[in-house]
Image (cartoon, rainbow, N blue to C red; front, side, top):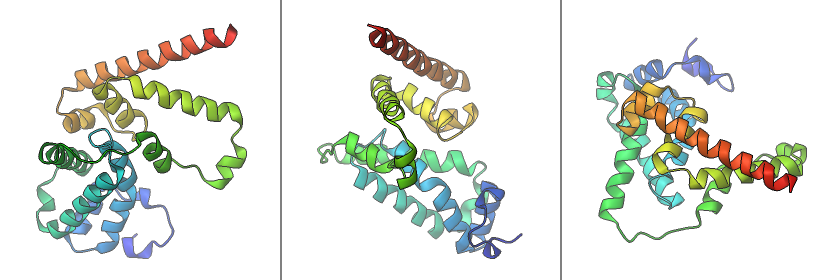
Length: 199
């Protein structure tokens, strides 16, 4: 099955390696599929380095443009998923160093806008689910940064420990430890909440 034959089909049938190969061959449809697959997760990941959502979105979009413009060297990249996350991380770390007094925006508003549920979900969701979502967000806010990043990359983006270790520049064992820390925070907070509910 060729990429240009797919209109509204399932893009998950194409691996990242295959999409990179097609992008290198000048297939813009492959670039669109790769962009749609990773733009939102990369923006969310970027918010752990930079709280200005507009700046994060702009930087992530720029990275996809650079990817397309430099497509002739994509054959040198062994793991497209890890590569794109590392590029985002490095890009936003550079921004932080060069612009120390950038304008801050309300992070809660940013997160809510990126995860705004569809109309159907809003109708289906009851008050308890909404409460639990807010509770999880509150818990995530107090988890140490690296542990939160590792947890989100693993549990939300579905990356493997080895891929996360490349992105965060740590060993897979350290990634495992960070996720264990995050799970402890979540477990304690939920336990504490249960006790408060009983009282």
